[in-house]
Image (tube, rainbow, N blue to C red; front, side):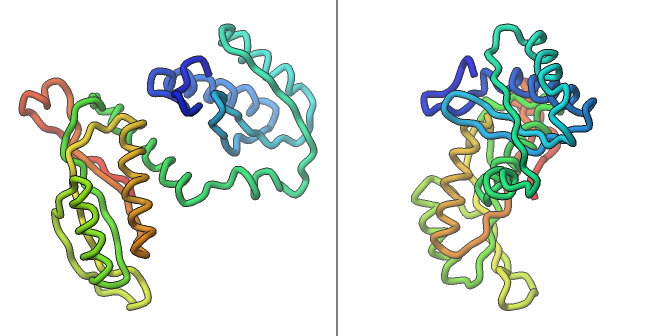
Length: 221
C-alpha cells in the first residue's frame, strides 16, 4: 500500500485503488479457473489469496495486473494446499473480521446512493442479550461512551437465545475507518455482557441532505 494508516492498515484515501486492484486480479485469475477466497491487510500491505487447479500461467495473470498499476509493487508466490489449510486456519473470518466485512458492505451501499460519509448523522446500533440485567448494564456503559438508548424490546424466542433487544444511537460520520472504530467499541462491550452485536444503520446524507433533505435508510444484518 502507498498510503497506509500509521498502524499499517488501509486508509480511506487508498480504498478505491485497492478495490480496483482486487477486481482486476479477480478477473485475471478467473480466466485460469482460480477463485478469490480472501485478503489480509496489515504491515502496510494487502495480500490477495486465490485457489487454482494448477500453478500454470499464474505469473502471467499477475503481470497483467502489474501493468495496469505500474506505480505499485507486487510480489507473488504459490504453494500446494490440498487440504485448504491456509483458508481454514488463516483466511476464514473471525467474528470481528466478519463484522468488518459487513461494515464495508454498508458503507459501499451508502456510497452507491451518493452518501457523503464525512457528514455526521445519527447511527443506530442493534444488540441482543440473554437477560435484561446485562442489557441494562450494557446500556449504562454505552451511555458513558456518548450513546443514547433509542429503544428496547423483548422477542418471543427460546429462552436460551438472546431475545432481549436494545437499540442505541450516536451521531457519527460513517467513513469506514471511523465506523469500524465505533463498531469495535460496541462489539467489545457486547462481549463483556454476553451480548450479540447485530449491525448498524443510518440515513443517507448528501450535500442536499445536510441542508435538511434526507433520503433512504441502510442497515446491516
